[in-house]
Length: 186
Image 1 (cartoon, one colour):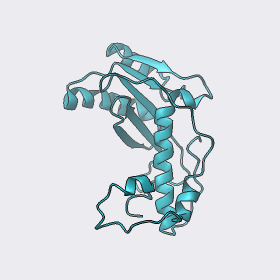
Image 2 (tube, helix red, strand yellow):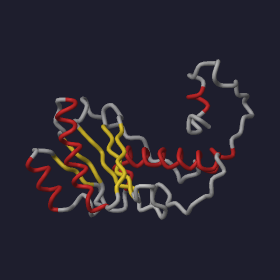
Image 3 (tube, helix red, strand yellow):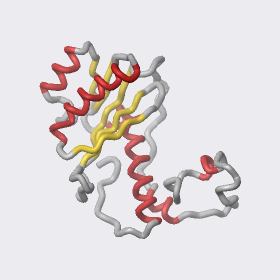
Image 4 (cartoon, one colour):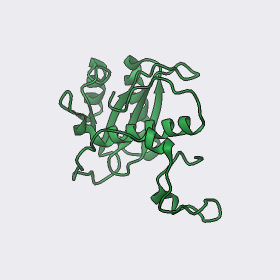
């Protein structure tokens, strides 16, 4: 439970002193309830050669329940090469462009790299004139997926699913009231 109901395969890599051995019949109802989903997306064979050559973006929300700071959305940024992920809580989806601009600056400052390509869905938060001008000014190629085809941005969609499932498993295990939450596909 402390590890967010991670899989048994991952638990095998944790020190034997801190995790009880699990037998083959181990069953966790919280995991089953939290991780129920539709058929998986097909695996992608494409990958980028270097960090920040391709960055996937997606916005999840709105959630009906606000965070303590009033956020109802979260922006997920995923580097295609390293699979490093940044999650940014957002109060208003129309302010996502500011978070994207800050992330581009962060990558330049902290990693001394420039983002070459950004891939996202056709969400209105990304198609704004501001984002188009920002990407053009930074010489960033932007790719969009076809409407209704989240599989084309599958890596970040899968990351959303993982984040939501982990939060849901923790919520169920802690016996907290289940709030009506949207599924990862929205």
